[in-house]
Length: 305
Image 1: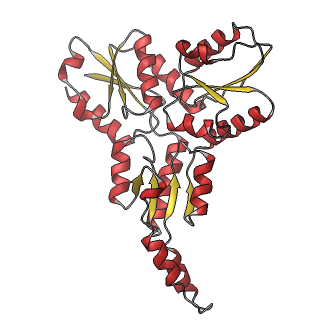
Image 2: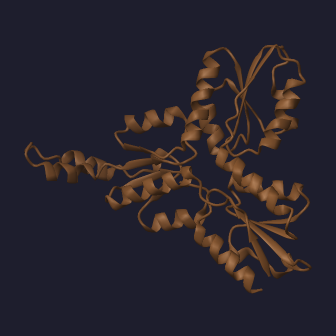
Image 3: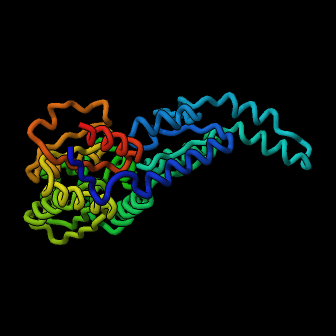
C-alpha cells in the first residue's frame, strides 16, 4: 500500500506545552489534579495518569486530607527550609488543561488554597480575553463554535450570560433581531471555511456594526490546508485522533467535503481491511492531540498491507 503523509499533522505547540507542564509537575513529585482530560487523547492522558496525574471533573473531587495534613505539620523552625518545601508538596496542584476554564474556577482554586498550574493554550487565552474586552466595549459577543466544547464554555465565562454561541446556520435565530453592534469570534479549532460561511450569513442580517476577529489557530489552519492538498493525491484518507477532538473531527469533515472516502480513527486498532478495498494510495493526517507514535504505528502497518 502506498501511503502519503500530510506535511502538517500531529501535536501543536499548545498541546506540547500542556504535556510538558504536566510531566514537569509530576517529576517534581507534586500531587497533581487535572480538571478534565489534559488534552483530547486517551493514550496520552492514560500515560500521564500512570505517572500520577489525577483527572477529576470537579474541585470537590480533590482529596484535601493531604492539604490539611500539610497545614498541621508546618514546621515552626524558620531555618528548616528543606522541611518547609517538603510540607508544601502536600498541597494539591490543580492543572488547568489546554482548553482553559471559566474565571470563577480559577478563583475557587485559589480560595480553596490549592496551587494553580495553568496549561491553557495562549490562543485560547486570547479568545477568552477578547470576549471580556468586546463585551465591555458594548458589543453583543458571538462565538462560532460548539457550545458543549470546554474551550467555548471557558470563553463564555468571561462574559457570563452575555455571549451567544452559534454552531451552525440553524442557530442564527439566537441572534438579536435589533440591528445593533455584533462582535464575532471563532472557536480556535474551526475551519476558516465554516467560520467564513457563518460570518457571511450573519452579515446578511443587516446589523449596524459587525466586528469580526479571526481567532482560528494558525496551526489548525495549516493542518487543514495540508489535509485538503493531500486529498487531491490519494484514494482514501485516514484522520487519526480522538473522537472527542474538535480539530480532528474538523479535519475529517474537510477531507470528506473534498470528495475522498475518509475514516476518522483513534489508532490502528480501529482499522478494518475493507477501508482500503479498491484503493492504491492512502493519505494519513492527524489532529493536534495525536502523538507521533500513534501515527508512526498506523503508517507502518498500512504500508505492510
